[in-house]
Image (cartoon, rainbow, N blue to C red; front, side, top):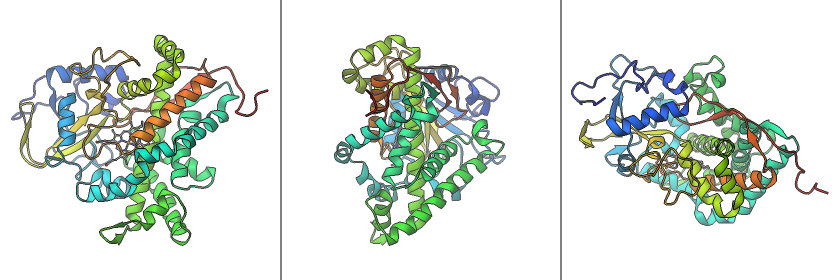
Length: 432
Ligand code: HEM
């Protein structure tokens, strides 16, 4: 399976062909097995262009490199001068206009990246996170209140999705259930452009374009309102913010909004859904968790993020000729870093396929490799997952899930449907 740079043999048709859409229709463990073989036999591998319908590759479009090992992923992530982000964020290419309108500073390099990130990062500082901790807990309590009397539900939709949806709505001052629901649905669909259930016959570009347009249209309406009547929310903040002595343009604020809707909602929602399923399948870990919920939750959250790999990949482009692990990378080559593989690297994690909430020193790559694009919402994401599990296993301790239906998705590791049952309980304040 070695890949000499000169010939770059194709993997097409083989089980290592991650550029085939069918690869992503396989079960997680089948994919994980392939990633493990790459780590062992070909830790920096070359691939043909993805079979994308976002922007179908031209005849002569080059493929991309994949970086599979933990240390190499961190190296690429932290070396932003040599591996930039401004020319595309994933192994698939997006039309430039679509990327600009929806991906904001995720798809930029410094100094623009740092300037724009600084505007919203004030909303996510650890100090501010501590301040809003009780409010987050309250939102989780009422999300559980909404389902607890039912005794059964698709918990991916009815519970996990609602938690970040509520928090996001409040951050941006969205009023009314209709807007909140629209944002959650559009954010979900936007990040699952390849999934047939979500696409409903549309091609990938239509899915991404139509869903991001819904978010932008709402944002533009809200920007007008906030200009005349500013509030305390993040959108009012963005409307008043200045970069280099100038106010942000509407399209820049719209791209912020779309980025945060996509980055904050689905990542967290799927992490929570996967967690509920993992604690059904791994009875021993469930007993450990329920035996000391307060003592073990923080470790459990880290292990969930490692094990699930909610965000599977991000891409960079080489800014000059270079080398990773002896493999020659040419200037402009695409370099995809596989966080979901790094978090299973046998050289870093003992027994990586074991789900172990007591794992110590769990430096997973769930939030990225530590470079300038490291997840801005990591503290918020952790908090939402933690309080979700705390509330569920305190008030619905016998919750068990059924067989999950996963999304077909090379970016987010998502769960469409996750049926669950539990003994119905009272809403807060309604117990006898
Ligand atoms: C469990 C939940 C989450 C996971 C697993 C996750 C994961 C990630 C990953 C892997 C990246 C890319 C890092 C890189 O390439 O260096 C990222 C970036 C980002 N995340 Fe998160 N995220 C989560 C929750 C959130 C939340 C709640 C927010 C806030 C609303 C958020 C906002 C962002 C933003 C704005 C970026 C782009 C940062 C930049 O380009 O500078 N994320 N996230």
